[in-house]
Each structure stands twice: as C-alpha cells, then as structure tokens.
Image 1: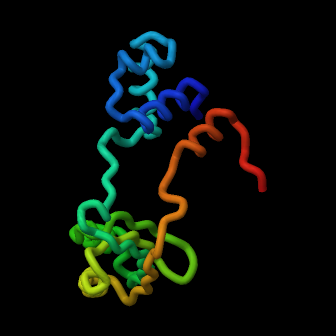
Image 2: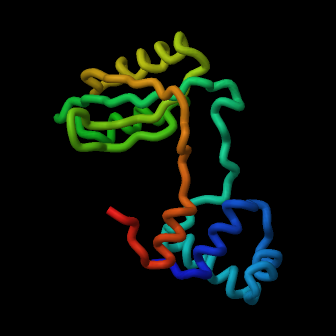
Length: 160
C-alpha cells in the first residue's frame, strides 16, 4: 500500500522527473531523509521500477503501433518465446494472456511495410504458431499511472 505522501512524491517525480531529493523535500514539506527513505522503500517493494526518461516511439521514427496476439506451441512454454521476442527491438512489451491467444505484444514499426517485416520476424520465431495483428489508429488515452496512484493512496475504489 501507499499513502498520501508516497502518492504526492510519485506525482511530483512523474510531472518533474529531474527534481532532486532536496527540492522534492522542500516542495512536499518534509525532511530530505523522509523523501529518500520513501523512495528507497518504494523501490525495494517494486512500486517504483525506474527513473529513466519516457520515450515516444513516433518521435524517433516508429510511427506505427500495433498489438499482436500470438498463439504459441504449448510444449515449449512462454518463457522461450518471450526470450526470442526480446531480441526484436520493435517488440516493446509482451504479456501472457487468457482467451483466444497465448501472448499479447505491443510493437512499433517505421511504416506499414516495416510492420510486415516485424510481424514476419515474430512469426519466424520458434514456438510461434500464428499471429493476429491490429494496428492502433490513435491513442486517445495513453499509458498513465497517476490516477491509479491517487486511488491507491486514498483507498477509494473506482465506481463500477
């Protein structure tokens, strides 16, 4: 669980990732040691998983985003396929799933023709039986965490 101070600290770091511990303590009205202890605790518990910059794939030339559902051979399992997917730079994430497929990947490409190259590389992987791809047209609600952080800190559940 996280509390209000943890949530405010995470929000500050999300909106101003380059803020230092001393400045964060000043803005939050707590001691520098408190901020450092909270950061260390949240990192150790896996709440905070990184401090790196967020990069927009489109800004570096990867303007096509797609989601690929993979059906894999059950005999080999998910892990070997995930290891092979990791070798393809355009595969940004992979998740094991329930439903019609076995894994869901978010991938990027420079164009639709380049997307075909990436999909061909995925299909060629040992353990992949078939794929199904959908192309994202827009991202009206991009990846976000702050509303979830606020809800977790307040203990309130979202309405049904």
